[in-house]
Every structure is written in C-alpha cells, then in structure tokens.
Image 1 (cartoon, one colour):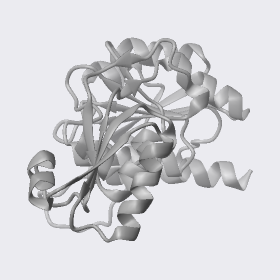
Image 2: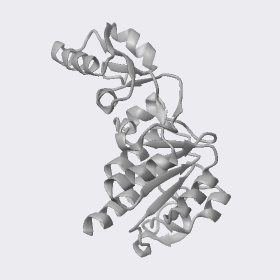
Image 3: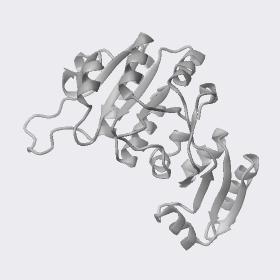
Length: 261
C-alpha cells in the first residue's frame, strides 16, 4: 500500500494468505506486515534464495514446504511455488485516498466498485486502476468481495501497492467524494458514449456488479453516466463488457487525458 495513504483510520482484518511470485514480491516490498513466506521445495535454489532474502528484509520467516502442501494451503495449483501469510491486510479510509492525491499534487482519481463479487474481477480492476494512476479503490463492506489472496493474485500484486478503502455505506462515500469537488461517473448502459464524455479533472468512476450493474441509489447519486459502445449487429445475449474490462477501458481513458495534458 502507498505509504502516503497512512493507516491511522485503517480497518484491520485477520491474516490473509497471498500466493504467486508477483503478488508476494509486491506484498513484501510494500512494507505491510508479513509473518511467514512459504517456498515450495521444488523452487530452484536461486529463486528460493531471492524470496528468502526479501522475507528477511521484511522481518518475515521463510519456510520450505512440500509443493503438494503449498497447493493444499492455497487451494490452487497456481501458486508458482511461493506464498506469504500477511499478518494484517489493512484497508485505507477515504481520507487516506484524498491524501495520496494531495501528496502527488494531482487531481483525485478514484475507482468505486458497487457489488463486484468475483475476486478475479476485483483484482483485475485494482490492477488497471493502479497502472492508470488512480489514487485508490473503494469497495463496500457488504455486497462485494474484499481483498483476498485470490484478489491479490489477480491484481498481480497491485492490491499491495494501491490503497483500497472498504466503506460501510457506498452511497455515503459517494456523497463525501462529491463534497471534495470530484465529478462521479457511473458506468451504465444508459449513459452517454465515452467518446462524448470528458473524464478529465477530479474524477471517480463507479463500476457495478457483474449481473445487475450499479444499484439504483448509486446511479441516482452519480453526476453522470457513461457507456462503452459496441460494434453493431452482434449476436443477442452479450450486451455489455465484463466489469473488469470496462474498468480497464475507462481507467485508460483517464490516463490518456491526463498524459495528454
């Protein structure tokens, strides 16, 4: 997590197992508290030595374990021989996200997830937000997935770098964001085409759930809606982009506009 975010008001959760080479590397480099790094006994000595050194620098213990045991711990064979148990996966506050933007002397750029339930989608959204220069992601405590090991893996470690705020009431969070003169756009099929939408300046993007999109109250609170056009004449049954794909397109548009300036 970005050090500028701070953790004074952060919420703490029980320990979380993170796996995969990039996610574990980013977690160890982020400065977050890590108890143990697990290394499969099938890892080449040089790779094991690299993670052992990283663990030592972060104050964690490195343990060699049988590959089959690591697979059982992670619940998947996609662990790449490396896992880490984070002592505290800490969430930021909204104020932390505003502070990150202020520290960088940039107009705030936030991404809000309204009911995203698939951890792979959330991880991909966080990854795109991070790479496109967002100052943080906001998720609800209820009605959506939190930052899990799968989310960390899907984000390629970006979830350890980008502040994630988990709020009790997403509607109230939107109201607070608007009080900071940040224009809130909702990704919705009934919105204006992206080509005719100006995503420059202080901006927050709201992405809805995989099935129903943003909730009714969320739509109402947003300043405007934006939609991504599709090629005409496509077969029925596929009428929208995957939420993580939509997030990537919208985040990149924000990056493109800011880079152009």
